[in-house]
Image 1 (cartoon, rainbow, N blue to C red):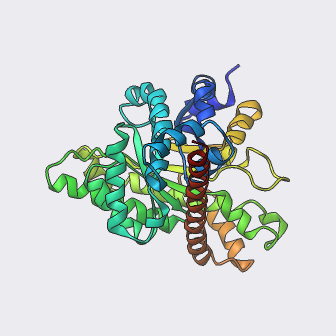
Image 2 (image 1 turned 60 degrees about the horizontal axis):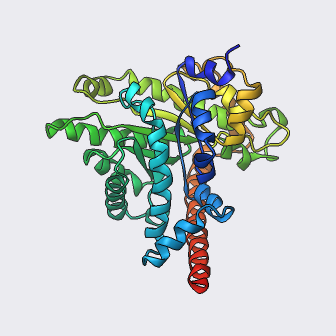
Image 3 (image 1 turned 90 degrees about the vertical axis):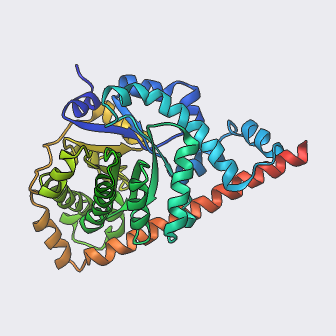
Length: 362
């Protein structure tokens, strides 16, 4: 009998793992996920790396060697992160080759401290991609107002970008527009426009934000409704004359990615967002627990309706309950950026603390 993850993959959705640790690589767990759970890519963020390095001794020798060699701070962190991600990129290389670069990606985020500095974000994205040296390495840039010009410029420079911290349909469309502008500039300049990108829409944080503040029948329905609305916009963009002109010149479609798909409500299904968001030519990046749960007892729901299904009726219900979707989307993006900054600072403090301990001991 085919595993639920394989069923979802055959329906045309890519399953990515939203995690990276050295243990996943060293124990062969990531390789098993690829072989057994149809996993075809991986995402990381500052919170994931903070957790991996803080709660494990597997990085200590590496930190020690690099600290003795004079590496510290962000530079030392990126050495650790790229060591993991280049190994993971190697595991996904067969998928990358088989799909001609559509799938098989890993992602590394630029420093979130740069989120409000367009030029510094662009410079960091270019430098990190070059440093990584892997064709299937996405650089993650937040889809904030300041991030959008950096995304356009990075795409024009030929750097593959995972646009992160998108929460609403409007934020998704702004990110898609930045991507297409970069592609169109490449076409105009006579450059190859096939620069890959994904747009990462965060789902579960919507439901956390309104938990206990809306009628019971609306519980855990906001994230899915926002996703449905965004999926309709995505399908319309793919069918638009603007995108088709770019595609005719060799451009790739920027795929829509569902992020933050672990269920936060302990009373709800642990596969809630995976089952609800099955759709071809999309990606679902899942925490490890969610991936294992879906592989164990998942089932693909109905495919998302290209017209958004009942999303507008559901969203109207939230508006009646006093939820200002646009204001909440802005707040969630700001909070997401602030959360990554906190994780980043915690991560660098953790590395510095381990480095100092090692220096004292040597």
